[in-house]
Image 1 (cartoon, rainbow, N blue to C red):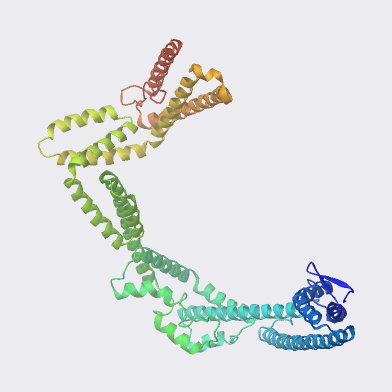
Image 2: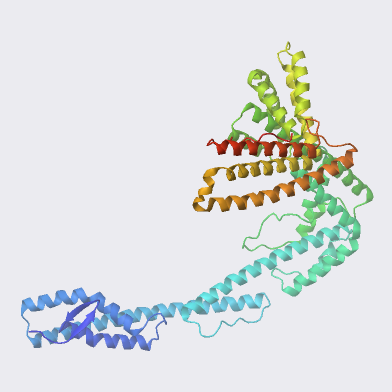
Length: 547
């Protein structure tokens, strides 16, 4: 009955006559959209498609009703006309609301323009003209951003103005100027100064500082050092004079305002600031007595800091060794050290208390603690190429100290460990070079053992080629580390005036030669074993070690 045009909407065909109403109505709506020049991200076709898709289900429902009712073509056309009028009325109502919204946006734009103009006048800035070609929304956002920018500029100028005024007041009082003289210097000061006003205040401050000269510079440097060191070690002044010296700078040039601006209006009262600053300052120009007092105070604080740093570092190193010997949980130790990071009397007290507790605990667990300390000593002696000497000395002392429960032996072991640590630090380059050579030499022996294994000849996955490359690389490392070791030993012998010997009494060159000979003999033995079908000894345990 209703066979006519169809319109594609969201992949579905809309049957007419109802779709015909949309076909007639949508071009009108789209023409209105084109007249209003929508944003470039929208176009007529996309708007029409969205409206059509949105009404597809309702059109389908309406068609079912009309088919069920059995309206004639004339009746259906009449109802379509009524529907079209209703749709147009709704569309025009929506357009009206959009126009009202646009009026509100334009009103906001005008308001923001006025604010920007007022800021430009207040801050002595040239008029601001937004870029051409902006849409209404873009223009409003641009003006809003400009207002925020100017508010920050206003706040910055007020803060800079107040800082300069405080600096001028402080330096003028140090020069002995009266309140009237200071006020005349600040005649250019206004609530929201221009850049020229700020530049003028900077010139006044520069003149004051040039007059104050080296005395004030020295005073400020001393006060800054005292405050910094006192803060680092949590120093508490012991006398009123020390207290005034310690807080002189913070009450003067670096004074913090009683009220921060934080975007709020604050009137700077010159008379009140002069009064407050004069009360905090001792007087006019600092004299030599003031400077000598400050120097003495700084020297005492420097010595106290050095004492705290040195003592705390020693205690931390001692505690790390004690914790390792006592097998303390690492997490607890890290938390404790974090609480003692600052070099203050409180940290020192905590470290001393923990050290005393560890000393008591070591005696309570001497049965397990003593072997741990002994092993630590021998390991350190091995690193310092003194293993034989220390083993011999230790055996003699153990024979004498078996009757006192091991307390004196324990004291000796701990004391000797600290001595060897000093020895190691003094000649660290030599010991590290020897260790590096030994590591490279052992790795080379392992590679050579793998090359003598008959199974490598199968060359699966290029193992033989990779192992040969590894051997060449290790040969270079061994040669390089040997040269570096000989150079370090040469410096040692030049400094000490005596030859450097290992714990076995041999020189490094002699020990290396013996080690190479032993390795060669071991390799020949390995080849013989491989020839009869047996695997050579593990390459992870070299035949000999230098120290």
